[in-house]
Length: 276
Image (cartoon, rainbow, N blue to C red; front, side):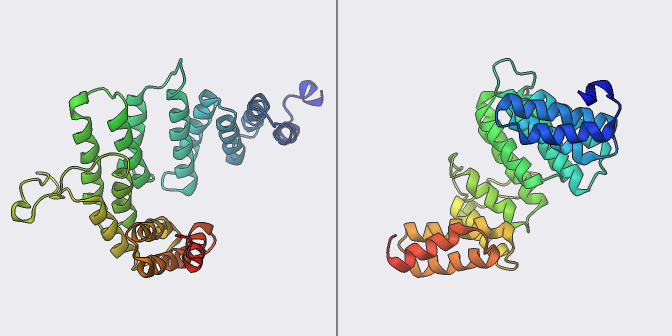
């Protein structure tokens, strides 16, 4: 009631938004909270934390139009290259992906693809953008890409990504992960290794196992939390080959990379108890 009487009170609007969020246990409740944060942000435009709350709650409430508006505003208000700008870009991608799946979507797959290409060119989460872009090319209609050329367009995304980020283990692992769901092109025979090279990049097609091996070589130089998934995939591959000693080594690398992730610990326990 106070906010209705004093709509210009920014502090009261923010407190109302916080209270609405705490009571928002359903989609409509989450959207109401998002709108309250949007109002508080309007009254306190320099506080971008209110904008992030608005966009995140709108996504949680499956209101992508509201989330997209907040993300676009955050992109304008944050410095390019800052973590906040990256977070705002990621919110925009999530909002577009949520909207494009709706029956009466305002977003098209072509628009999502353009956003992801901007992310790649601007180095905003380039690896994840490349992976998502390749999936879209394979599965969804995008203007300028005929159905017959979808597979080649998806592969070219990784060719360009790996040319730009040849020393990034995440880039090699992204192509490996992509080819777990979509068939990889035939590897190039060594005797004719120049025949299937991209004329602009020189990166040849290879098997998903080779991509994982290359990711492991690069990840071994620096065991960080970002490389945890690489070692987990490597360990699971060795289990499928019944190479349990090697699997144990890779799971130990995963634990060293990120001891807070339980998955590698679980696999080590299964190996120790013979449950694999």
